[in-house]
Image 1 (cartoon, rainbow, N blue to C red):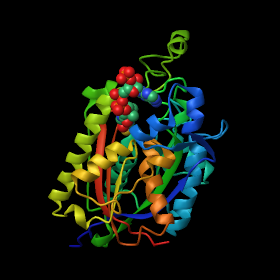
Image 2 (cartoon, rainbow, N blue to C red; image 1 turned 90 degrees about the vertical axis):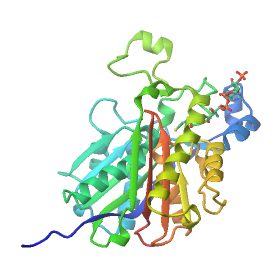
Image 3 (cartoon, helix red, strand yellow; image 1 turned 180 degrees about the vertical axis):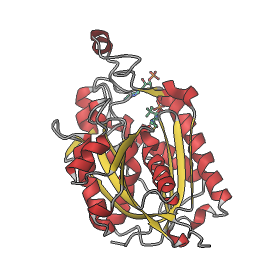
Image 4 (cartoon, protein in one colour; image 1 turned 90 degrees about the horizontal axis):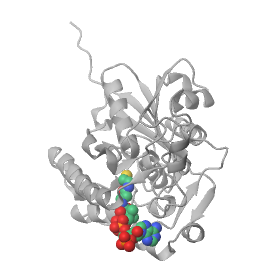
Length: 338
Ligand SMILES: CC(C)(COP(=O)(O)OP(=O)(O)OC[C@H]1O[C@@H](n2cnc3c(N)ncnc32)[C@H](O)[C@@H]1OP(=O)(O)O)[C@@H](O)C(=O)NCCC(=O)NCCS
């Protein structure tokens, strides 16, 4: 009787796209009642990139995907699934942004769909890719986190407009029989009782488009910032401690800790709780702001492009976002060094 060999999901490549236009704290000082000093001290953010008016989530995603595909060495016709995580899709109802991305990069007759997990989107994508690959259903899964957050931000609301930016990050996740290359562990979770901490009230079945929606600005993101902050620090720290303990790996064995880039104070608090050094903790929030589902792959792309992320090195991903959702993953980088 033949026995099927186990299959593992490996992280083969990374790519990202950052829009050209930069929105600095000095620019925001002219738009709302804020200061560069306040923003830097409270968030660590200096600037964020904003997509052009006619540059959509799928455009940014397609550019990140092209890079991830090229760097993976996998041909487009070997890709059998495309998944996009976004809360700022090209269209809120249909078609999915993944379908549009697939068309833009020339992949047709392949399953494509979106997932919605806000800032946890990229690690949620990894969990879906892992499940498809390990069940034997797919071999090469292209995942992309992409956001045009500027399309749902109210640039008269100083509590949110200082935080968010636009961008995209993609990765190729492929089947391997080599266990050493595979994702070691992944944990993803959610608690909908905190749904009102981060919410875009419209458009949707609760608030279909209407004059009232526009008059009240319900199409913009709303956030309970301080409450979210406290819960983020607690949850991110707990989740990452658990995944390390479960796999008997200590924090000092991790060369690259890539937390979701929402606020430098959150990143610092979690890094300190794990007793990690500055070299271990990847920080890009200062130049990109919070790019939601794109934040982790954009940060990963930065360390790969600078030669810091090497083949075989361990990565620890940790994220938290609207839903509320959270997730962490422990995995080696199974692609080539730059
Ligand atoms: C938004 C955030 C930066 C605010 O920082 P904070 O230290 O919590 O500040 P608070 O919300 O308590 O506000 C403190 C004061 O600053 C003011 N303030 C808020 N935004 C401001 C701004 N851009 N400029 C100047 N003052 C501002 C508030 O109005 C408040 O004033 P008050 O004391 O007179 O009422 C912070 O809460 C945060 O980063 N939250 C988490 C964000 C997050 O992670 N979101 C996504 C999860 S994926």
